Amino acid sequence: MEEDCLFCKIIKGEVPSTKVYEDEYVYAFKDINPAATVHILIIPKKHISSLEDLKNGDEEYVWKIHEAMQKISKAQGVSESGYRIIVNCGKDAGQEVMHLHYHFLAGEKFGDKIV
Ligand code: 5GP
Ligand code: ZN
Image (cartoon, rainbow, N blue to C red):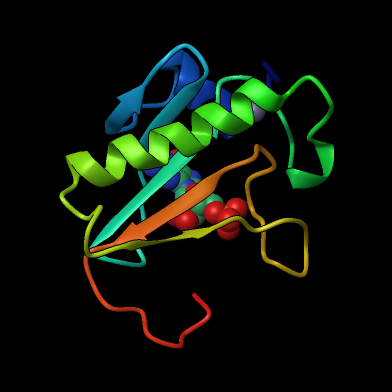
């Protein structure tokens, strides 16, 4: 956990959030500024700054994030209709919060749009 990390504070409950899913490895909550009908952020409970900081040994977090996607898609009723996952990594991608997070977007057709 990092003292000054917003998402670490959300995991610890120091900053309020609307929880969607939680297990030993993963926390998922609604994005405060949704870019789609369904916009959920899925984060590892360990502080990993970005995709660039994933290390050997983090495999369980990576799998659990992906398992959470499957569970969330079923719970949201979009496992058939589909969803889009976005991970911004670094400045050029526009990563604002330096705690690895997967954007889970659904509930509409995204077509050819990148985001
Ligand atoms: P990034 O641009 O880093 O990929 O995405 C950061 C996301 O975190 C944005 O979509 C933003 O709306 C969301 N966000 C930023 N601060 C908060 C917050 O305090 N609570 C919640 N639920 N989402 C946040
Ligand atoms: Zn963090």
